[in-house]
Figure 1 (cartoon, rainbow, N blue to C red):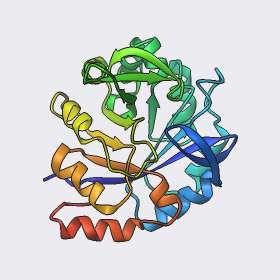
Figure 2: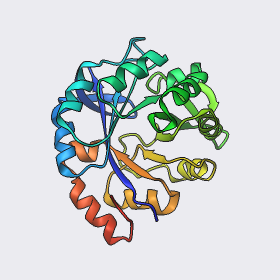
Figure 3: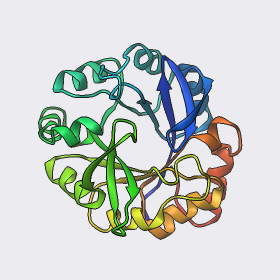
Figure 4: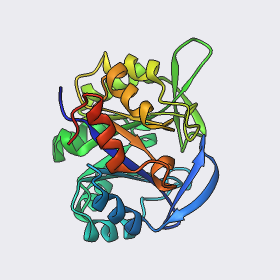
Length: 251
């Protein structure tokens, strides 16, 4: 079994880390560099930062916080939000990020994935998918911070993204986001069974068993969470010890 990654997710708005439920009821948490260093010191394997209003505000990712984070941590991190052209990849990577995540802009212009993968390598290109269950017993891709249904099928979009050159897929369940009922295992299984790149589970962690289930039932490569880490409900060290006790190899 490959070693799995524990990945805190930090949503950034106006230079601060915030958290909500199902993309609503947003509350302030802390500064990105402060939380980033805390998680790095606690043993997180990677970090993910999303500038959550960049796409809806039709602006670029705020680069100021990217450099601040890069200056204080020593683990890989990815940045997304408002990435719409190759130059945005260049700017974010130059500020110290290891990967760049695309979501809304890739739906609008799928060739962006291919261009970025060819220029920077697939390992730098993360396709983030915000998915919500529809009435056809499948999942639709939402864009602009979960505000707009793109009409795309989430599983087929994941397959297409990998074909275009994405080296990793982050699958976020809008239905479970911040609800702490567990990850959408069915959605994750549908995607991990179809792609051969790392898949990261996002949206729904409430207790340690949820992390275990995502690995053992859906075979994800990384488990991403926000609320349970931000508010001290689960420590990364305790979580890693628990997963090891369940026979899951952790970095």
